[in-house]
Length: 155
Image (tube, rainbow, N blue to C red; front, side, top):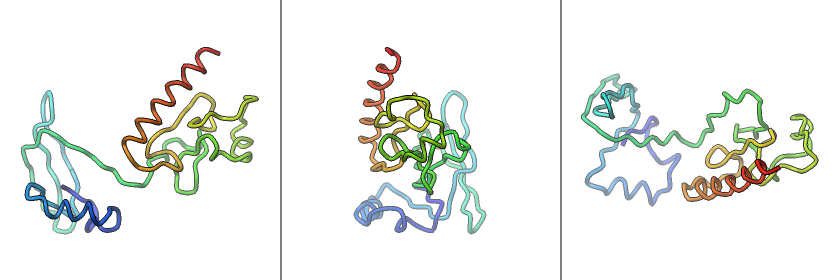
């Protein structure tokens, strides 16, 4: 397990850290990040670098799960939708009257539950303001949005 920071204590619950520490098949590499992915038709190896020692290591690895953290990557939206101070996308009831006025909300109806300040654009999962940071919640939110999309398309 590669961790870009010095450890897990700032971002993870103690009970999860304990499980990781006690797992005999998990190696923890703090201050480390992926610097290269290699393969032909699929991932075959990856290279990581310890950011304190600058040492790199390549290993034959066929699968990668990336957890990017709790900071939203929403800067690319460049003001297209309303976000909170931390950069999480506001949806539904989290959108204030001011947010909708600034976005020039054109519809007579208020935004749907997971709809952003841009009509027919929805946000679900960890990028959404007020999210609960659980995969099951993101999946549930996604399924809710499908019904809203069908509703919008039928109008």
